[in-house]
Image (tube, rainbow, N blue to C red):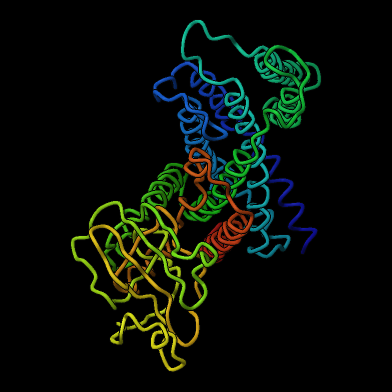
Length: 452
């Protein structure tokens, strides 16, 4: 069975890279990145605050979005070519009659299409990375980046020349040869650019290497794999046009799921957003120990002022999820000036308001045992007067639709917030689950499909 799967995957990969639409859209992405260096000079910012700063933020935003849209279209075209078109032409009968189980056929087709998509994605991301290295041409006086132009245009021209030569003299398939050359030559071009500065001076490769941009590109690749599985599942029952419609529909819906559904999942209202936090005792700033006290200043005075003794909750998100202390606790009715009573062994753990004045709250961690607090409240966190409740129906609908916002790390890169390795691992696991779900759906749809 493994041998059959590998053979089908190899055949699907070759069929995919032979599609003229693949190299056409890849080269179109490169042309768009070139134009972005001229038309992205409208962000009105020149502050060096992150790996992409000033006008380059807008260039990176447009470039990454361009790759996302083109990849979605490409997934629909290629998935249709290797599944739907073979069903219409009856060529899939020669494979199923071997006999080869239909699930193996679907998994093999996905592996081949995914390989072709990743090859195209690598080339498009190299175009974007070269554009980010070049930077935006804000004025006519800005100098061109010679190494980027030489190596970037050079690897494309060399690939086109070799592919045309081999097609004319040896009869090799032009799209297949071109894509096969573009992948290694594009990577080589980017590596050479890292070693050569804008003035053609040798430099350490890490000078222009942007690790967080690479992390954002990696997560985008995971999103493309999810969309590829969606397109493959649609192509088992639909033709090319409808597969493209479904792919783009899922793409748009997955980007809007937070706004359309996600905001209705969690029910809570914030008292305000934290402007600053300071511990009363600098040596007890973790807020994990009993008796720790913080002075929290909000960005504005809350409309409903909490009373002394009221419970208070903190969350990094405006929806109230997740809470920094995921526990429901009640109001404290004892003496607020008696610390021994607040820390009595029979006292349930809680975070309470000691006093409030204007936009300033004084809160304390009390109880006979400490709460499981993930971290102390920080600026930009949100303050709540009650725990967050979850609407199960909205949660089920939100979870059923792929959420592409998890893969979109542009804001983190632009705001100079490093993406932890644990988050990349969770996103990878989420992508694997989504791919597994849609491949299972593809197997179910194809299992009873009449291909005779």
